[in-house]
Image 1: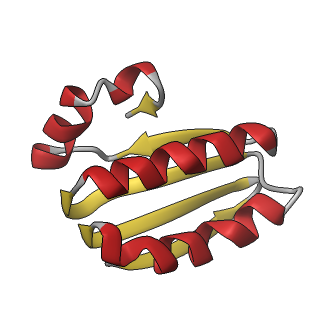
Image 2 (image 1 turned 90 degrees about the vertical axis):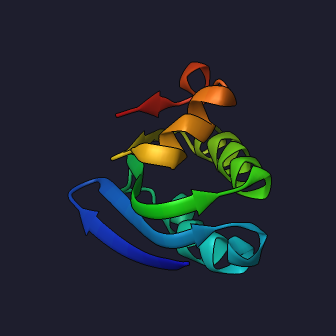
Image 3 (image 1 turned 135 degrees about the vertical axis):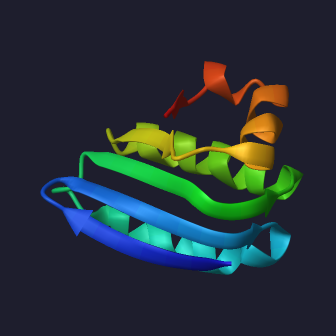
Length: 101
């Protein structure tokens, strides 16, 4: 998986691409940790448009990030969700836990 970080006036978009699975753990964490430490950032969007696969460990990483964002007083949304990724998130009832657009 690749992560592209786009910062824009109080908002950061983490644009993920490829397979989001256990092997992506370090890369995902190294992308969001500076965002959690940045007091200027109030909104974090996880852009899943280019993700073609995610597994249960990816769901766990998203849940951990949700907790960290809440503790840092940042809002978190999953954006550009489509296809198989959308189905997995729906089956896992993530719509009850995240803002999904």
